[in-house]
Amino acid sequence: MKAWLGSSAHRSPVIVVLITLLALSPISAIAAPYAAMVMDARTGEVLHSRNADTRLHPASLTKMMTLYTVFQAIEAGKLSLDQKITISANAAAEPPSKLGLRKGQTIALRYLIRAAAVKSANDAATALGEAVAGSEAAFARHMNRTAKSLGMTRTTFKNAHGLTEQGHLSTARDMSILGRHMLYDYPEYYNLFSRRSTHAGLREVANTNRRFLAAYKGADGIKTGYTRAAGFNLVASAERGQTRIIATMFGGRSTAQRNERVAELLDMGFARAPRVARLQKPHKPGFEGVGVAVATVTAVKRSLFPQARPIVATAAVVAAMEAPAAVAVDLKDDIAEAVALAATTPEGAAPIPVIASPTGLPPVRPAALMESRANSEPELEVVTRISSSGGRLWGINVGRYGSRYQAERILLQTALTEMSTLDGSLRKVVKSPRGYDAHFVGMTQETAALACRRLQARQVECSPFGPS
Image 1 (cartoon, one colour):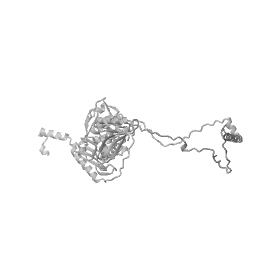
Image 2 (tube, rainbow, N blue to C red):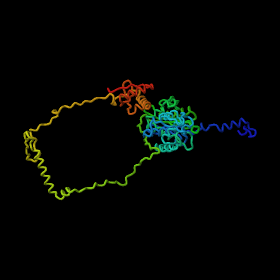
Image 3 (cartoon, rainbow, N blue to C red):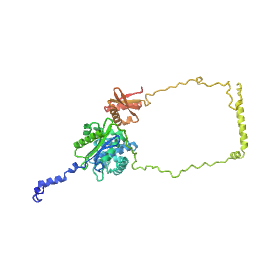
Image 4 (tube, rainbow, N blue to C red):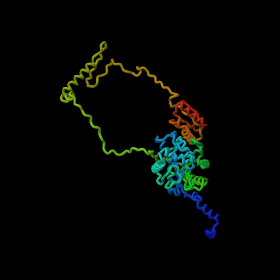
């Protein structure tokens, strides 16, 4: 090779340029370290692993943690889906992939969630982190605390989006754990990751994982990631029958090669996992709160009893204490007077004879007394009225489907689409000979009608129904 190139004095300028380009070319991007893990999502059992604990660049797999903490904040009441978020200069300046947010712009939180989950938008992810913690640095610290609470022992986050940064590292095992928590801790949001496209406020955005979702049977998420340092990463989940598998891969050479390898990993998982397994959901940690003093419960060192109320000794009490015999005599006189008063007969009424009891038992009830019978009372009529307006006895039907899974999936998607009117209602799947009906129940007549109008405007099948 050295002889072919010749000395530096006689080396061709073309060869010099070629050597320079090879040195600067992104060959390292396609030579990123490979790691993989396959997990039975129902039990958390590891079915396959390779380099699963090697700390690597996670790229946009990071956004799973960003979204997880946002869902925690919503559940804790710190944020709401319709809350308007003001975009900072820091978020607006993030490099692609991005939604195109501008400094000072306001946008609903729900659209930032969609952009980060589906489009993998970096500007949306940073805006979400700042909404939770106030700054990206504070949010990174919060992400790391949350990661430890989930059992992600070899992960360190530095930012909300996953762009390459020194020390921003994770593992295939930790990302599999995070994907499982996302699935079971927040199932109401999980369908976001299976949408082929969605509207993110400014425009319609396409899913970065749409090719794999379309190609692999049962796939419904979760998240892709790519940087030159990380290669092509993917955490994928698929369900077939009663079995659900999570497969994670780091270091793919291309989108096609990554998708092919993840499909092989999922196939391996379905082949190795038992057909029947008892669901063992992971422990769901609480929301710690960011920048807020949280009260801690400590052991009680000393139990303080309330002080006794001071007793004021009145003259009457003192006299009674000094002369108990006199009090007893007065009490007998009062009792005798009450008995005599009760025995007197009102004017014009026949006296009621009192029969003495020689045994000391209560006297026998006089025969002249009338018994109180239930049928002597006027019969009470109980009237119930079903309110067809104010009562929450109405519901809506959003279609009939071939399986319970399809019906439940549509209910979740519809609940996220129309949260304002469906909030407080209950999702219910009703089996019939013709299929599985997807219902929302526990609504008023007005709310059911309004929900159907809004859903039908979005081309969603909907019909209200009342109490039968």
